[in-house]
Length: 249
Length: 322
Ligand SMILES: Cc1cc2nc3c(=O)[nH]c(=O)nc-3n(C[C@H](O)[C@H](O)[C@H](O)COP(=O)(O)OP(=O)(O)OC[C@H]3O[C@@H](n4cnc5c(N)ncnc54)[C@H](O)[C@@H]3O)c2cc1C
Ligand SMILES: Nc1ncnc2c1ncn2[C@@H]1O[C@H](COP(=O)(O)O)[C@@H](O)[C@H]1O
Image 1 (tube, rainbow over the protein chains, first blue to last red):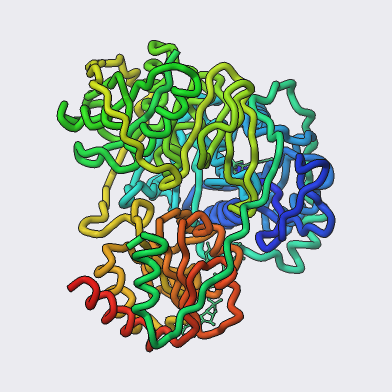
Image 2: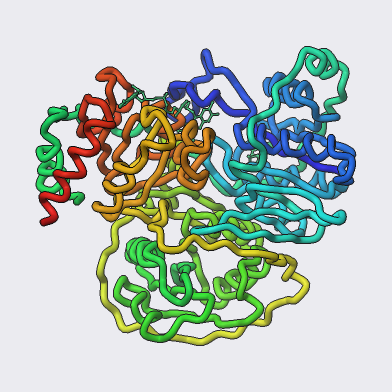
C-alpha cells in the first residue's frame, strides 16, 4: 500500500511576521522555511508504518503544491525518509486550488492513504484535507491522533469535542492528522541527507483552477495594554481587579 | 436567500457554541437582509430546538435519522448540502471545532463554496464578501474575500458573544434520503470525557507550565480551577513529560482556546504557546521571572514562586466566595 503525505512549506514557528506590498503579502526576508509541524508528524508516522513490515505500507511519497523556492523543504522531507516527492509547480492562490491539484495527482497515481495536517500554520485553513477527499469522493477522518493497521484495516483514533473515538473506514482514505499521530518528528540523519540528493522529485504542471478566495489584506493583532503588576503577597488585589475591572470572575 | 447555521448538540442539549453560531449568523443575516435557518442533526426535543429562536433563528430544520447517529463527514456534508440548496442558502456558518473542520471542507467542494475559517468577527463587508480570519497562528489576521456564490464561514469558538434576539421559530422535521454508500465510518469504541469542563468551552482556564516543577505540585492549581469553575490546561512540555494529560495541552500544536480569562502559572510565554491562547480576553501571568515574555501578553501579573502564590490565591478566592 502507498501513502501520500501532503506537506506545506511555512515560516518557522518563531518567526516575527512582517508584511510587504501594502500589507497584501508576507515579507519573506530572513524567514526560515520549514515543513508545517503537523505534516512533519504525519510524515514521521507514515515512515514508522513503512518500517513496520506487518503494516502493508511499502512506499511513502510527499507532495507539495508550490514554486521551485520550496525545493529545500521537499528535500528535507526526502532526507527524513520519504521515498520520492511530487511538486505541483504553482504559487498556490488558495486552499481550493491546492486541494484540486492534489486530487488531480491522486486520480492518476492511486494512493491508499493520503495524510494531511489539521492546519497549515500560515493560513490556518484546516480545509485542504477534507477538500481533497470530497474532490475524490473518498472518506476522510478528521482530527486523527493515531493510525495503525489491524488485519490490513486502517484503525484511527479520532479526537472529538469532549473525547475520542476509535474508527475505521475503508481505503482509499484521507487522514487529517493532529498532535499525537507520532511522538516526536523524525530528524534527518547524515545518510538521509546524502540519499535525498538522488531521490526523484517529480514535477507536475498545475491544471487550470479558479481560486474561490483571496486575501486582500493582512493586519497585526492590536498590541495589548501593558501588564499591571500585583504584589505576590496580595492576591486579593488581583481578584478585585478580575471582579471589578476585567469583570471576568 | 438565507443564512444557514449548522448547530451541534451533546446528548440532546445544544452546546453553547450553537447559540454563538446562531447569534453570529443573525448578525450576518442582518447585513444581507435575510433570515437565519438552523439545522440540527440528532434527537433534540422541541423545547430545546426553540432555544435557537432566542438568538434569532426563524426556521429550524430538525433531522433525526438513525443513519446519522455517528458523525460521518461524507454523509453529514451531503445532508447539509441538500438543506443548503433547498433553503437557497448563500452563507453557511459552522463552528471551527473538530466536527466543523471535518464537515466544512467537504461541504465546500459539494457546493463550490469558498471557506473563510477561524473567523472571529462579523464580515467586514458583504459586497465584496470579506471575512476577518486568524492567520500565522494568531500572529496576524487576514481580510479574506470569498468570491463564490455560496460562502462558508467557520467561527472560532468563544470569539463571538451570545446576543439575544427572540423570534418564534418554525420547526420543520426533515427526513433526507441518506445515501448508504456514503456511510463508511465505523465507530469501534468511544471514550467520552465526563464530569469535567471542556477546555474549548470553558470561560476560565487555569494553566500550568514547566515552572510547576513536577507532576506532584498540581493540587493548588486544580483547586483554584475548581473554585473558579475553570478548566485546567498546560503547556506542551508538561503534557510531553506526562505531568498532565495530552488533551490539556494548549498552543500551536495543541488546543486553540479563547476563554474570558486565562491564568498562566509557570509558563514562559513562547510564541508557540501564545498561538493557542492569545485570543483570550484577559491573561493573568504568575511567574518567578519578571522578564518572562508571558508578561508582555498578560494584563495582570504576579512575580513570584507559584508554590507560594497559588495557595494564597486559593485562600483569597475562598474568602470572596464566602
Ligand atoms: C513546532 C513547535 C510547536 C510547539 N507547540 C507548542 C504548543 O502548542 N504549546 C506549548 O506550550 N509549547 C509549544 N512548543 C514549545 C514552546 O516553544 C516552549 O518550549 C514551551 O511552550 C515552554 O513551556 P513552558 O513555558 O511550560 O516552559 P519553560 O519555557 O521552561 O518556562 C517555565 C517558566 O516557569 C517559570 N518558573 C520557574 N520556576 C517557577 C516557579 N517556582 N514559580 C513560578 N514560575 C516559575 C520560569 O521563569 C519560566 O518562565 C512548540 C515548539 C515547537 C518547536
Ligand atoms: N501547498 C500545499 N501543498 C501540499 N499540501 C498542502 C499545501 N497546503 C496545505 N497542505 C496540506 O493541507 C493541510 C492543511 O492545510 P490548510 O487547510 O491550508 O490549513 C496541511 O497540513 C498540508 O498537509
